[in-house]
Image 1 (cartoon, rainbow, N blue to C red):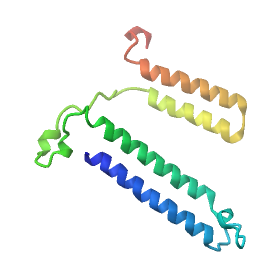
Image 2 (cartoon, helix red, strand yellow; image 1 turned 90 degrees about the horizontal axis):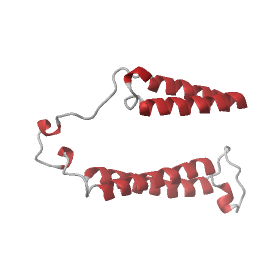
Image 3 (tube, rainbow, N blue to C red; image 1 turned 180 degrees about the vertical axis):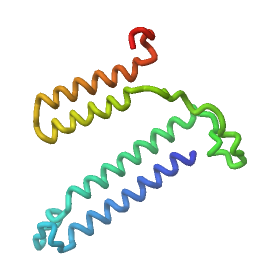
Length: 150
């Protein structure tokens, strides 16, 4: 098992233990922020934090499982090889568009959508959704379209 999968599995184990401790701690702790009922048992559980920890545990397990199952298809990475040098990790990391306007346009579309949700303006939600779909499509097609269509 490689280092990345081990990190995610250890995070999942830590979050799982913390979820149990959080459940027990909030169930039996008399706190003024929680509705405490004598003998209430799980009624006193603080649900927002507990569900968040359980979902974080599930996310770490999913990522660890994905990394664990895909490591068979990947060659040995320099960070997994104990005798690797810094130069072994050199090279092209990928292609990043230097002058693309679409990530900023997508941010604006998400802002319009978010403001529509916050203020419950349905026309703004619809406009933000349309803008987000358009900007996402243009981001994906910016190098697939002919130059005169940009």
